[in-house]
Image (cartoon, rainbow, N blue to C red; front, side):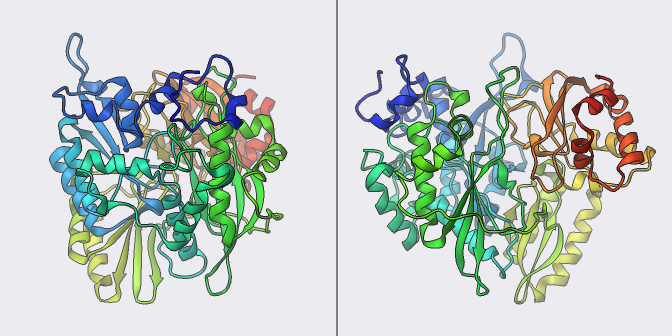
Length: 588
């Protein structure tokens, strides 16, 4: 093992590392001086790109290095650019922050903003030379990009709807607290050193419950051994980590796809009573690697409100110590739980967590809520949900949204379905906003039921992992599916998701019909998820040429209509059975 003494890998995690030692990536993190090097040395060296080592550390600061593949020319330098992702817990974007990133997207980016499937804005097309200006402007306008990417807790999800009643305020508050609790501490100083000359006034200012929980990171097995980074240590987590909070019955956050999913129960006054806890979900996988797979989470139990933060950081510490640090594609917590089992996980967790984990509380049937259209937010306030196919905001619509935010000081919230909510519209401005919005939306294509819940990843031309198209062709794919369903006189909606590679950023493995890029214009066909995102789909075809989509799906849709018209498409697939589905697809 070649890690320096300044490392978070303790004796209790040695069993996860064999004689060959940790991966090169682990060594890179250990040598980075808490996410400084080699990034800080390369930031202003005049080159239009970072070295691979700096690129890996840059991810922790919220950015990926990309090149525009559409502009590649043999013998020419690549069109290097940075994608920057913000940290927006629960999808909340204050007006001041939105106006700042909107302006920078036009001046220093590619003129668009994009809503990610984890409720955060992404900016594309930023030159390395301008990266410091963009990130510093985000920080100075109440935002952050810290830990939006990298081997660390990512953006914490929560229902985007700004309802002021029921459990929604408590769920949003808990998401904010978890985001602050799991934010790195010494690395936050590194972050501010790089982007705002070390101005510590921009540090995260945690609530009292978070401050108390952070103190407890210094003790017991939760402690990494490094006082300046008590939870993460010098090498952070083995891989990315994802958390979501919701209320009973609302599955807008794709709860079962998270490393930790929390369902918040409240009393009649909206006070948090406790949470049902789910662990071990995750979507990423690799083609032709059977040891990688999508997985839905297991129920862990119910925890009282006063212990939720301690449980969350205990689970993170357990994954820190036992997650695979040798094979990155095997490093997610889902593999740890899948191999060791939930019984082992509960037993091991008791060493980190001193409080009782009770039986799960009963939950109502869940629904995929999207909050589109007009809704009462609370006393004297409204919000409106605007559909954005693939989450891409640009052109006249982007200009119009800016004008509304600027004129009426509206807050924006982003949904996991890549839609945008305009919030805090008071009664006095309700009619004016509604009229202006109706004029703006005259230039936007109306959404069909099929496109209402469809999502896609960016894929080509900028994502370095993309095998084929996704975002750019999803509208065309949905038109073709709409025409096929119309031709067969089927009016029931289908949940469709599409990605350009198997990493699963658009969570296609939960869809009723998922298309996963497996070759140029070829896709794996996944079928059998549910409209409320509670069951994993299954792969039926490995390489379906896109041109064959209607021919392949028509017999299946016809049989669905004739035999199971009252069932959702996903439930029909589940009832039908694999052999019959394959026969109808022409592969049996």
